[in-house]
Every structure is written in structure tokens, then in C-alpha cells.
Image (cartoon, rainbow, N blue to C red; front, side, top):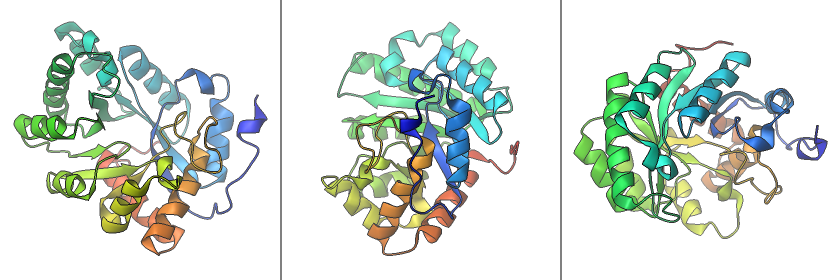
Length: 275
């Protein structure tokens, strides 16, 4: 095991946090999931949502959730995987939703920064998956990168999402945040908030009430300071919570109380709790 990634314990672990978005099925965690989750629990992160990005990833997320206490799964096709969205692939994905570890549909959405799929293909895949999430009665996890206008337009076009959703790794400004909140969405804050140059995110966190915020690692990506550039993991969520508390001029315990409650409510974790 690579202990360099998990040897340091965040300064404050006397809180209860939920990592609302992690990718435990990805290669950087291979062979270390049990240790990573144990370290997270030691640091107060006792629940983790592991997120699917295609059929294989969604299936792996479910398998991990079945094997580990306090882990939940999601299913979906990431916008980078939009070319794989067909009637058959969506039908296969829908069957996975019957598993009791599945708490959300996503991550889905639009990514115009890298464009692994053409925007029109992404838009069609996004709209079809919003429809499927409604059918499956699941909240949605939205990936939105450089696509704010089209993201909100397609969400509005798709109609009311009865179970709501979350804007994963929120990257918009305050005005966009308020628009999404008005549509019933929560905003998920990643480790980027600990970066000095993340001024737009700092402004959003200061302005938006804690009742509308969640926290995520997005591991293995986007490790917060002081681990920037290294493999991220759920235990490091404490650093994200500490920065949010600093920006909100409140305690980390208050941040934990609100964000944990928000995540539990959105994903209905109290109803499907395996712990």
C-alpha cells in the first residue's frame, strides 16, 4: 500500500462529513479501497458516494458499495461518454438502478472544455438521461464545465425533477448558483475552494447559505491544499470543510452539520443506510 497518500491526518477530525462525490472504482485506488475508507472514517467521513461515469463504472460502483459499509453508488454516463448513450445502453443502466445501494443518477451533463463528444451529442445524451432519472425516481448529479447556459436550458426543458439534484464540483458564479438553487439544486463544493486563486468559488461560498451546499472530494482528482497535485481521497474532505467554515466565518462543526444533512436528504441516505 502507498502509505504516502494516507499517512497524514487532517487537523480536525471531530466532525461527521459525507463525501458526496468520489470515484472509488478508478485505478489510483486499486487495492487500497479498504484502507482509504478506514482513514476517511477516522477523519469523520463515514459515508462516501462513489459515482459511475459509464456502464462498467456504474457496475463497479455498485460492487464497491455492496462490499463496504457506508458506501453508496450512482449510475450514469458522463458527458465524455456521451457517444455510448443508446437505447440499449440506457436500458442496461436502468436495470442497475434496482440495486439498493444506488442513490442517484449521474454524473451526467455537459463538458465543453474537452469535448470528447460533440456538443449536440452531449446535449442529446444529457436530455435522455434527465428523462431516465425522472422515470427511475432518482436525484441527479450534474457535471457542467464551460456550459452553464446550455446546462440550465436543458434542465428547464426537461421539466421538474421530483427528487432534485446537485451541481457537482460547482464552477459557476453567484447568479448562476441562485438560478440553480431556484430550480431545486444543491451546490457541491470541491477541494478547489482551498486554492488561493479560486476567487469566484470563494465568492459563491460566502454568499450562498449553508442549507444549499454539499461537500465532495471528486477523488482521485482535485486534492485540496496541502495535498494539491497528489491523489485525492475522502479523508481530505476535512480540509475543504475547514476552508468553507473560514469563508463563512463559522465553525467546521456547523459546516459539517448542514452539509451532512443536505447530502443525507438529497440522496435519502437515512432510508437506505446500510451502516
